[in-house]
Image (cartoon, rainbow, N blue to C red; front, side, top):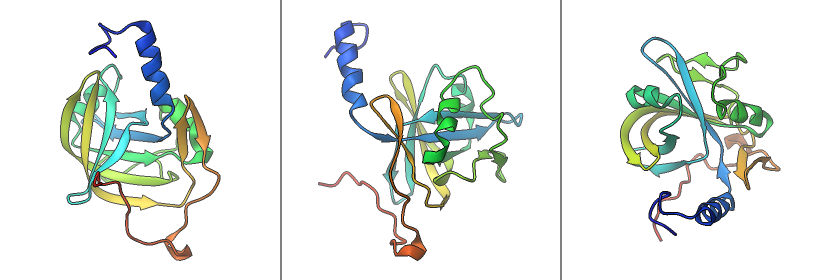
Length: 186
């Protein structure tokens, strides 16, 4: 594999994308509001937990995205795990040049950030750090609040959205009320 796309052959790029498509990812919509009250958002499959103490998550945003500047200056943002019954939202937020909030599915939180209350899970984040990630910016958020409603999430696999075949257990249904996260320990 070449060191950069400038050095890569078209076959290298195709093989790289094909390999990445074999890894299923959760689907999120990330939203924020700017100083003028305008709402911004994007669909991301590059999202994961980063730390339990402090509670950190990361998400990657393309530098070419129209909302990139808004997230570079945002002090807070919200991550929504897209429920399987609303993969249409993931498509909408993955499309440039349209009003992503046109459906009326979002309401402002106390900080003015748009929130989709029917998401499978919601994580409210304060910006903790931003890092260069090649053609993306890595946004690291300190989680300040969460909620989950048990909806099955949308997953992205082989360049298509898929639904998991069952709902998540709820705390009342016997699930542990303790978060489980990959820690990178072997």
